[in-house]
Length: 257
Image: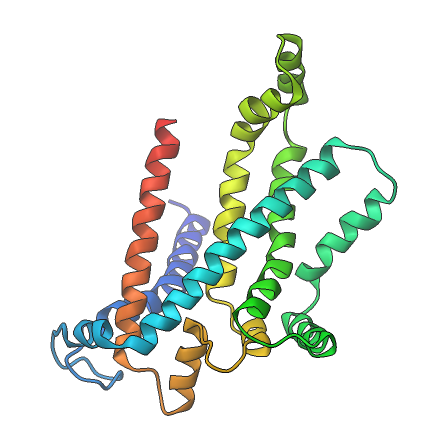
């Protein structure tokens, strides 16, 4: 093995340690007997029991999950249709529309959050779950559009033409040819949209109202009061376990298909 290969191996190992060591620490300290995060004193499931009984955390978790699911469904539908329309149809101002759809990705999130707040205040909307939902959708549509558009741009149009030649109409071709072949990009866009919405903090804190908290907000409020409790580590561990299980199931289904 050459020196370059050894250095690349060391570099790769350091990158993986940097990425995954914080996750490992969170998992380990979720089983810590002590409430102090700086020292592991013994194994315990106490904080999982505390987590189960903490209604505020579960309400915030439900709010985040509810917002993320609705955001994903709406942004996935609108973003996919926008991407399909931009790729498949010729229209005036196509370049300008394409550029506008990239803007939410380019501009700083704090600027978008502030603009949403000013718009809601000007329009007289009462801040709450609906304003949070609309803000998340407005942001996530662009990410869905970019991912799905990239998938459709590399799509072999001859497959659609073959379907039409064999007697299928345009709707049948879309449902049986275009949509299945675009599914990897659509699923990737859905995962990105869900993740961005579920853990969003900046837009949420600007657009939420009294009595409506998401999980990032309640974690931030606990941190501001003196530190995040170990029950949050337990919740994070549960969420990561569910995420990895779903990713594993999806990968198996993808391989089989």
